Length: 114
Image (cartoon, rainbow, N blue to C red; front, side):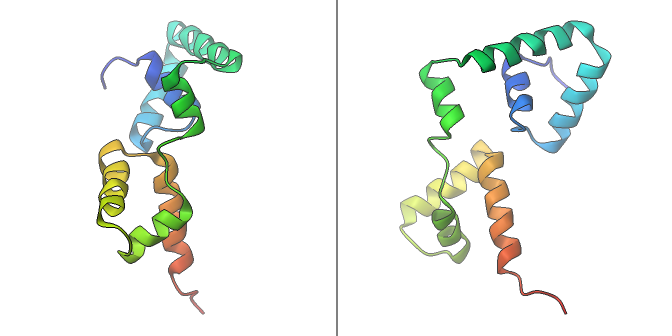
């Protein structure tokens, strides 16, 4: 794995990394006192509340989709531009929050087994 950056540590803190990267960061944190010190700084910075546009955008998940929009995507219904954006947001950006919401909707749509 490449060097673990502060942004990766922020994403780790917010559980916003793919599973393999989450595991790799966790392993690296266990093995490196230096990385743990950097992680502590990241946590403190997050607690103070970073006020950049990017930080607010990430924290408030401005570009994330509603469950209604994700439901429409599952049904293939709705505006083609919105469906394209949902595809981009899920597959290119890889938003873990929206992916979790989509997975939940897929589970809810399956009939219960008897």
